[in-house]
Image (tube, rainbow, N blue to C red; front, side, top):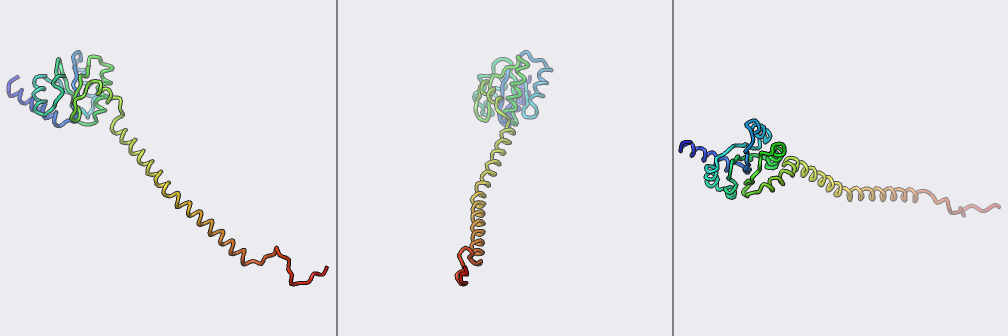
Length: 192
C-alpha cells in the first residue's frame, strides 16, 4: 500500500469515526467471505462493517479524537460503524455471534465513551429505540387520558349535584303550589 493510499485510508476511517454514533470493534478471524456478507446484511442500514488495519485505525482514531479503542486494536480487527440505533447494531452483532462463534466482540466506542464487550452485550438486551419510544408515547397518552378524566370528574360531579339540586328545587316548588291534603278541612262542619 502506497503512502497516498494509507493517507486516504486514514482520512476515510477518521471521517467514519466522526460521522458515527459509535464503533464496535470485533475479531473476525475464522469468518469466510460469505459469513462477512451475511454479517453486513444482519447489521442492516444502521451500520457499516469494515475490515481495518490496526496501525491505520490507531492513527485515524487519534485524528478523530477517539480515546479508549487503541488497546482493542490487537490481532485481526473489523469495525462496525454505527450510524443509527446502537441497540439494533449490538443485537445484530450478538445474534450473529451466537451462530458464528468466530465473531468476537472486543469492545468499542459509543457516543463519546469507550465500552467493553460486556456493555455492548447488555445494550443488545435492551429494546430498540423505536420500541422504547412507542412505549413512552403510549404511556404518555395514557397519562394524558387519565389526567383528562381526572380533570373532568369534578366537573361531571358538580353537574350531577347541580342537576339534583335543580330537580329538588323544582319538586319543592311544585309541592308548595299544590294544596296540602294531609290536614283535615276545618271549614266545613262535621256532620257525624
